[in-house]
Image (cartoon, rainbow, N blue to C red; front, side, top):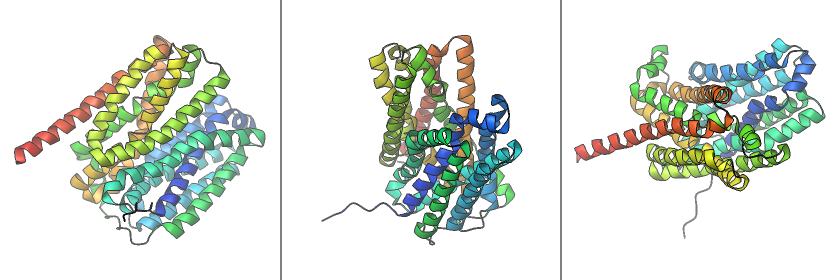
Length: 397
């Protein structure tokens, strides 16, 4: 009688950590007005709370990961979570705007390192055929944060004070650190310590650069629409604010489901094959939304489908970089993986900017098909890689 293998206990700690990080990343978006009033700073300047966090992610992922590469995987994780917890505690007790910005940079540094190390640990503690699903489970903490954690934290922050939310995240970080210490095994493979030149060598590897470009275009492309989804639902579909909140909750639930589905698809088909399929479906779904957004009923259905697809591509994009890095830059896998975490954020930033240009020139209703056009590039890139690999296999036979 066969039984399904149990989920590795370490994934519980990783998922809780991912949840806490997801909350702290997005919660300022709903509390900018309260924070602006507290620090007597303009709303536009307070936007630095978001942008400086992103800079911390971009710096922390490749650079800080390398600096702690001499530590064991478990100690890397513990160090990162302590840094994350301290960053949020500093934010909670901030008495000046500059102090808050410093706290956000520190939290961003931890974010970049966590998803780099976390992806590797999730892969190592799981069976080879379950690696993508393990990464998806870890990222599910982030999706649950979007659905539950951020709305709840925003409500509490508005009810009590903005700092109250950061104190709660500090508590979550403390619990995640303790669980990680207890549940993460000590027997994980130690990181391969490379020289500084080894770490920067990833920028010379064309296969890795193509993988990063695929992440930027493939993950970022959807945010041409998703960044302004609420505006589309309001101005094109005609929904009221309260209804839009419910629809975004439905979207968030779909994101959590799609994230797990994407991991299973990647394990079953392989990273690049699953990306080819998912990008193809995304092109259709986003292109169709240009038409369905005008019908309230069809818009609701389409929003759910968009949610299913949004995070489904995250596990295969991440595992793709890990696989390529192991082949072309084995001494810089951590840095290579960290750079991919940074490219996720770069893709979002670039796509949001493109979406803003679209809105200011031809209108918000055009964001769906622009997103579909960009995602079609990702589809053709993945299709080319699949065809190339198939030809290589045929030549060896």
